[in-house]
Image 1 (cartoon, rainbow, N blue to C red):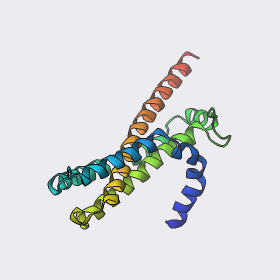
Image 2 (cartoon, one colour; image 1 turned 60 degrees about the horizontal axis):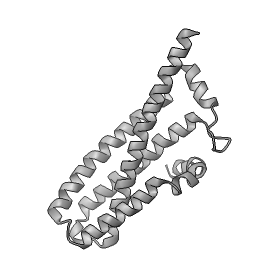
Image 3 (cartoon, one colour; image 1 turned 180 degrees about the vertical axis):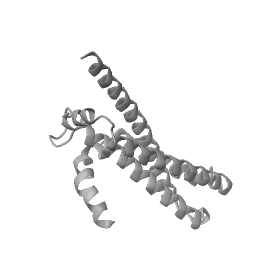
Length: 177
């Protein structure tokens, strides 16, 4: 397991590291994490609200994680081999030469799944370690990871829509030729 995780970070994440670090999603998540931390410092997050939020987060994260895994399965098993080859052979503009639309799509889905898995683990830890003993940085981390996972999920939904549109256009183009 650790070897596979290392390979994923060494190969896939490293190829995308610049676009990950310098993304709007990271900035929004940092600011959101700071906002959650400030809300906790000001006493706006009492334990009752926090318990409800943790329960909702666990529900959201598990459903989203399942959705990510299902999306990966769909993309890996594209029923049209010609369309899969077209995606794999397409080069992305302003990207490294070894990236293509297919690998980029799989990375978006797997990266989103990883962050939702991390959110699930974090929320389970939070349920075991009650928030009454929390420090400000705990809220910062929870806020950052939650908002980043939400941003990634939105990106994934948009990517699925674009994938579906491209697939429909490809089917139409082949019917006319």
